[in-house]
Image 1 (cartoon, rainbow, N blue to C red):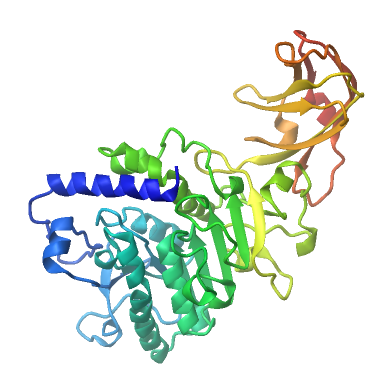
Image 2 (image 1 turned 180 degrees about the horizontal axis):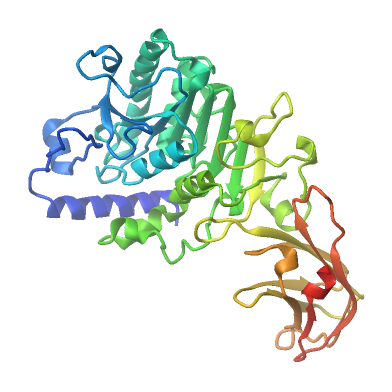
Length: 463
């Protein structure tokens, strides 16, 4: 489904919602705690408000109660601001809001950041300018960036350093962050782009979209590059999860609960929003999400890229590590990194390289490889050709290689192919990336007959 068709779906949903919402928006706010704006289509048309940018501040002193923040906040004497000039500042910028609703995930992301680091978190609320007609929203993003730059200039005057700012932009918000970086000539410390918007940006000049020159370090996560996200590398480190397109678990719309009454919307944006949820999971630090440098996703899946030697053996990681953990200088630009993830938090998977060598075949065949534990099985079908005897492919598994209990081979070509027995000279498994470069686990000289699966205990091999 092209992104244009998905946009049509969003527009239809918008019309449905606005036909139901005819009342006046509830603007009650707690006297002390602030929240992002909401707007309806009717209100949007009546007020014709192009932009209404405001800022929310969260710190470890007010993690559960956001405060409104402005350039006057630092000079107020009656109520001192929680903003601490001596601390780094994270700036969160949301993207396109198809239906005018406030992004529910913002405070969750802010708290995740604060649990890891003692920082100021500024949330940029531009819901009014980011809602409904996408093409008009794109016209607004540079003006939003200009307004943000005014605030950053004021904070500089109070002692903040440009390198202490880390912008985290989601979808269109990534390009807003990029233009802020352009206005400050790339002196901003860091920009993280979470599936930067693709429509109207893929062919844009670097001046008009996020690119590596916008900050001292730019890291990007791609999860929907064939629809709402951008398909080209736009940072120093570009992580393409599962190739950057279809994310595991999204076919059944696992994030449909975002809008319970409009589950189609959850399906439409599932891939796109996965970048955000993976990033928040990575902040928890329960497992490392490392990318492998490779020319293409096809090469990665075929096992042609299994190490990070170009980074002196250190693989870039998603999260808050400085320069994604890379220590070489200068940092390469637009480096494509690939990794496979699971369908639910913490999203980590172990990468297993399977190397299969078979004796020459008279006819084509198919072998199914299954890696099993008590609670989980991972399978991969390999089409065997008469002209090829060595095959390499990448599998994933929730546990490490030596925690996998058995490997099973099945000759599954009985129905479609005529090849009888398949003689496997060797089947080898190795986990990557591996700093210690362990020898692969291999089993040799196997006959796999049709209808007679072969299995082997991997635990004994590991020992």
